[in-house]
Image 1: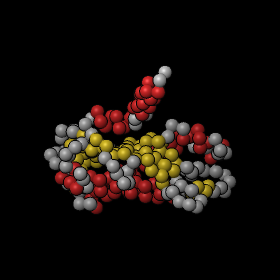
Image 2: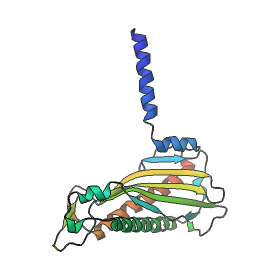
Image 3: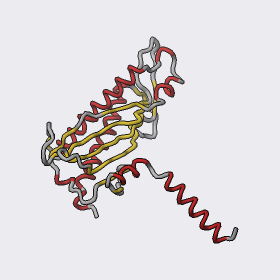
Image 4: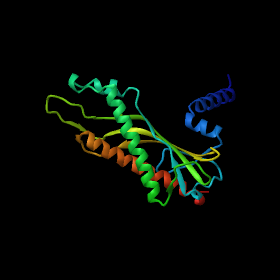
Length: 222
């Protein structure tokens, strides 16, 4: 095999590997007519070319869905005593609380930016569908007959997703995918359900604000 043939073969192999490694979200967004846009604060941002998201001043927020990570219970219970094991009902409670919190925070942040919260689909309304995937709470409270304390560096993490569509036509204008940590600091502190909610709410607020900023930046984006 000469050097030219070897070079062509290497390029073909590397190209095929890169294609196979293409993120599923990017491939799906491209198929739906969206293009990837560079964002300073969001991991993945896809927008429909020439869509004027800044022109919408009303939003319809659908109920948020949340789901804990598939290995959350198994991983957490591995190092816990029997009295402090987390159970499926704990996962359901955490999912419901996170979903309700994010839904309220989205409405609060959009209202603060001058948007009207719509209650039904109508012309000029942007429908927002948000969800929380791979939710992982590092130290959820569980009753124990012993006085125990848990210390963590961060409350946990989650993948936050948002889709924005025309409420009437259903046309997809934007998709956001972002992996965030709740309370990433340099020191270890006591953890509880109260502190967990506080730090996850902080993550949700920052993410909602970043999404709004990207939507409103549309007219100034090349």
